[in-house]
Every structure is written in C-alpha cells, then in structure tokens.
Length: 174
Image (cartoon, rainbow, N blue to C red; front, top):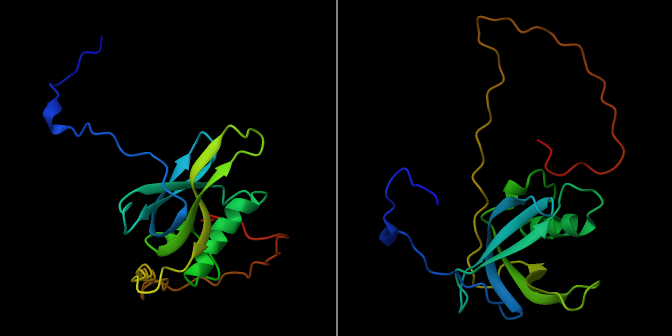
C-alpha cells in the first residue's frame, strides 16, 4: 500500500488512453517538435507531429544516434532534415526543431526476426508540401558582447596553434 501525502482529486486527471494504432503508410505533413533521450537504446528520439488530415495531432517518434560516427542511419536522417530546410552545416539538433517537413511513413519488418513489425517508421523526408506554410527558422540569438569594459585594458593573448582533427566534426558538440 502507498500512502499519499495529499489527497488526489482523480476527477481532474485525464485518464483517456492515447491512440497508438499504426498510422497507414503514406506521406504526411509533420513538424519536428522535440527530442528526448532514449536510455533504453542509447540514442535520441525525434518527435514529429502530424499537422493535418485524419491523423492531425498524432505523434511519431524516430530513434536516431546522431553522435555516433558509426551510426550512418542517424547521421543520414539528421542530414536529410537539415538539407530539406536549407541548413548546410548542422551544429546542433536544436536548429531542426519547429521546422515543417513532409515525410513518408511506412512499416518495416525486422531483418533478424520477421515476426517483429515496426510501425510508423519515417522512411523519407521531403520539403513541406506545396501550399503548406513552412515554418520560419528559429530567431537568431543576439551575440554576447566580447569587448572588455572601457576601464580595463585588454591583455594580449598568445596565438594558439590549431591542429585539425582527422574525420568529420562530432555531432552535438557544444
């Protein structure tokens, strides 16, 4: 038995069950609304929301590991999302949030276990459909002034040699 520290008004809690039935394979207008860590698989789940039609408001999650250089599928998905909205140098997945896309949703069979079917898989990414208002890019953040106060004289810094690191830049670097 669990004793509650305060009474809980059960009438104020939505107890309806969300619809998790498979979405039919087709193209949908979606918005990338968020991401959350998926500790079970050690990756990130991108959250897409269908914006119109019969399934408007339904959410689709696509697991990706954009930080692992060996995960070409995650890197490919992030690159497709960025290219679709005109981002050539993706530094942070936050740049993709709030953007509109058109995606193809499919069902996939697990290659190792054909009895396992994956529903609502993002299979292709395209620009938002014609006539569908694309989202504006996120507002630019004002740069932080780097000049020292007038009363303090700057200290000259010695140049720091830069040695390039082989390989592609790491994803999600802060």
